[in-house]
View 1: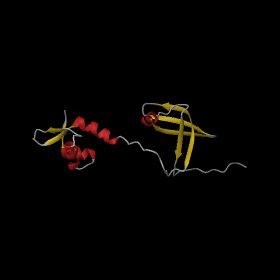
View 2: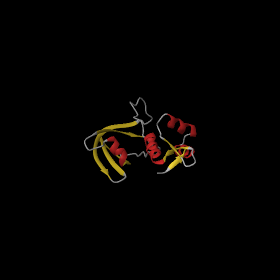
View 3: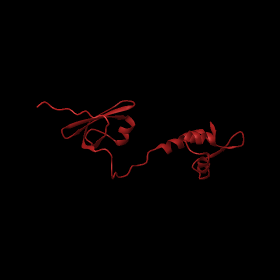
View 4: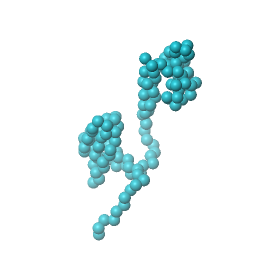
Amino acid sequence: MPNLRISEAAALLGVSDDTVRRWVEQGRLAEVRLDSGRMGVDGRELAEFAQRLAEAPEPGVTVAASARNRMRGIVTRVVKDGVMAQVELQAGPFRVVSLMSRDSADELGLEVGGVAVASIKSTHVVVEIPEA
């Protein structure tokens, strides 16, 4: 089992050595003794801890957003492969297609017939003049 020094663990997590020591003291990480006799952490446990730290918290209710183009619609198609998903939404007369990670589509529970909101914000918008 790989064991890591406190400083190595801190560098991998992007925190200070003191933060890792506090987590050990609080019982959030188990302490191991390295061959040198110094305090360390188990690498496998640190990997699991890092994943838990990276989990996004629930966003709660949105009270404001910078996206002005929000369209509520019904999901008409979901195509998933190993990594990506293509989701189509019919919002009134508009068909919106979104490409996202498969994980995102799974986490959102997107399926045909479900209601969703497409928020569109782009720095590249094409404006055209229709034929009269």
